[in-house]
Image 1 (cartoon, rainbow, N blue to C red):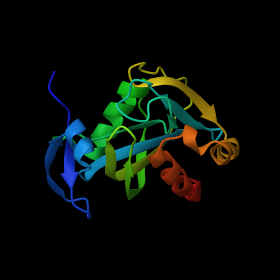
Image 2: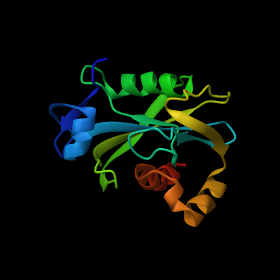
Image 3: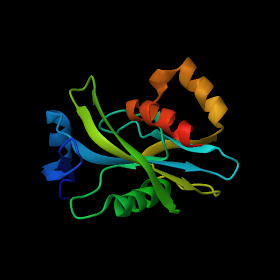
Image 4: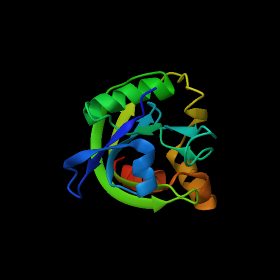
Length: 170
C-alpha cells in the first residue's frame, strides 16, 4: 500500500510541497487539513470517538470527521471522500472558516495544520468505519459544552479550538 501524503503549506495556506503523512507529523511540518461538523435537524452534533489504534488521539472524542486532502484533490472532494469512508454517508458541506494550530503529542508527533472547517446536516444513522472510529453519538450543544468544561481531556485539541468558533456561527 502506498504511503499517504499530505499537502505542505506556508502560513497563507499556499502549497509548497508534499510529504508522507507520518513524516510530516514527526517533523511538525505545516500542512493542510479539514474538520467536518455534521448536525441533525434537531441541532445535535454528530461526534465520533477516534479508533483507539489511531496514530494520535486514539479513543478521544472529536468532530464528525477530520483528515487531510491528498495532493491531487481539492479540500471539498477530500471532505466528501473521508465523510463517506469514516462515517458511511455524504451530505452537502459548506466551509465556514479555517484556522492554524500546532500541538505536540506525548508520542513525539506534532499536529501543525491549517484546518478548514466544514458544516453539514444529516438526519440518519451513520455507519462508522471501525478502523477510523470506535463509537459515535449525537449530542445537544448545551450538553456538549458542559461535558467539555467537565472533561476537556476527553476531546482532541483541534476540536476544542474549532467548537468555540462553530458555536459562534450557530
